[in-house]
Length: 213
Image 1 (cartoon, rainbow, N blue to C red):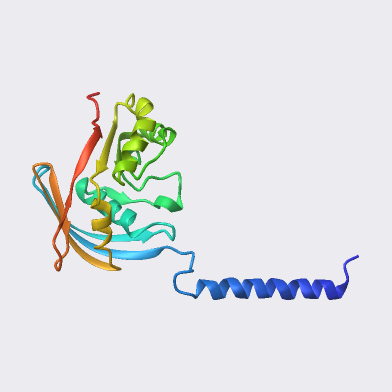
Image 2 (tube, helix red, strand yellow):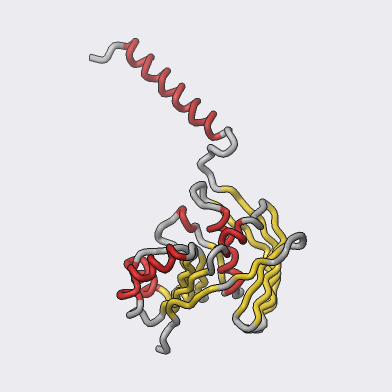
């Protein structure tokens, strides 16, 4: 039998652990909740004739860097539409970073940021009308692409871009909890900036373009 004193000590230690967890949650930089960023994004996309202002709320997962978060915002700017929205991202492996759905709930556009494996891309290809992967990291993206290329090239509705060396880092330098950003797209070139610094030239290489279906 478990002695009553042992039960009391166990309950006491549980309370101590819970108190320690609450204390950690109150320490800046140690909380496990996502950080919320607010962005007013003005888009002038002359290639697609898309001109709009978007008020965005972005949840930055504790394990997500400023660079990755800003690449997500860049992805939104480059493929913006009335129905494009941020998903749970790193908080939910069943969702992409961004997607748009039609009025029936069917996924039209599925956007992944980073270097997903070929199985995830293939699964997305079967769920959405089009899949867009935006890799970043320069040389590491080229190595990743060589690893998945054989299988991904067979997926007709998939587009793969790789951002230029240093683009993600330059975008990350723009990150603030509250942002006002402008994105201009013209002749397959894009610039993203704020009101106080030089805009970042968002350059990319097309690893794979979608095939006509």
